[in-house]
Length: 111
Image 1 (cartoon, rainbow, N blue to C red):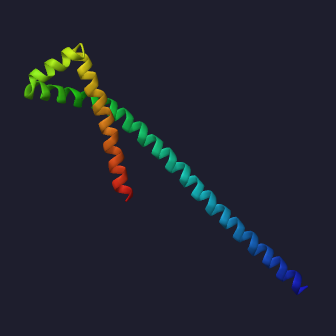
Image 2 (cartoon, rainbow, N blue to C red):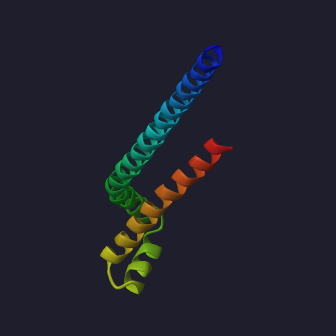
Image 3 (cartoon, rainbow, N blue to C red):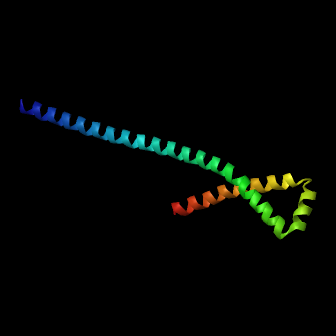
């Protein structure tokens, strides 16, 4: 009778430990999924922020360059067949630069 009771206690304690481990694993899995959702949401947010910032920065750079080196900007506009092309090139450059800055900041935070 006592052996059966010890076995039953062992089974119950083993089952309780397994359930506890499963619950902890489930909790960490849910945290991992939530962290992934937050990361995707953060990247989407930064994408739209970058879409808004890039043209503004491009305009600022274009205006700055037009004030500092007007002859070069005129030659560049003639070479690229339009001022709009120069502006779009600057906008793409600003878009890529923002993401490069984000990568550098991410790398610095990780180390």
